[in-house]
Amino acid sequence: MENVPYSQIQKGTFLVATPEIDSGIFFRGVLLVCEHNPNGSFGLVINKPLTLELPEDILNLNELSNPRIGIRAGGPVQTNQMMLLHTSDKIPQQTLKICNGVFLGGDLQFLQDVITDAQGPDIRLCFGYAGWGAGQLEREFLDGSWFIYPASGKYIFECPPERMWQEILREMGGKYATLSMIPEDLSLN
View 1 (cartoon, rainbow, N blue to C red):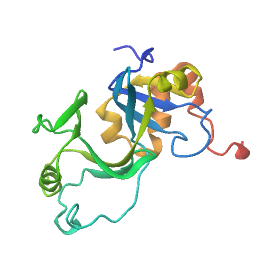
View 2 (cartoon, rainbow, N blue to C red; view 1 turned 135 degrees about the vertical axis):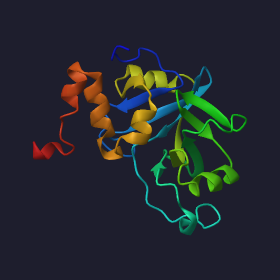
View 3 (cartoon, one colour; view 1 turned 180 degrees about the horizontal axis):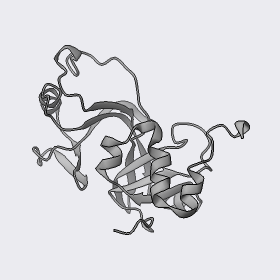
View 4 (cartoon, rainbow, N blue to C red; view 1 turned 90 degrees about the vertical axis):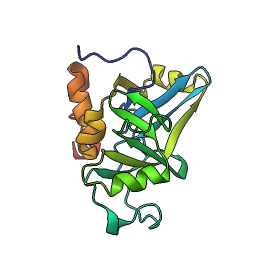
């Protein structure tokens, strides 16, 4: 597969924030587009770790055996809503396949089962999401707010979140690789 950016936004696309986005949750953000159609789009920020205490009936840390669980700030909309992003294809009736090996969905029973399984799937608990009305995301892309690139589970589940933005830009090559070297704080330059 050639490492060239997509020219079209679709489900299974990464939105990679351009340097034009200089603050907020989207600053150096990487979002996974989970749905994109003429009515609008929604996605999850996948590289913003979140530290919070969850009620024991959702995530009992005493029963946690799966070392592949991470918590992310999924976006600025409905931040109290949790969505499950994972690598399990065991519950197709509850999940939406986003791209190869990456699924969205699952119920509380599924979550309880996978956190207690030492061999369980990779899973990201995403709180909140990003949403766009009809045509809004395309306008943001055309206005230069986002680069787009094919999504992969490698970045979602294996890449440290603090390095994901830079590593995707480096993999995109050319001018994108150059942008990956811009310091976060330009006053340090």
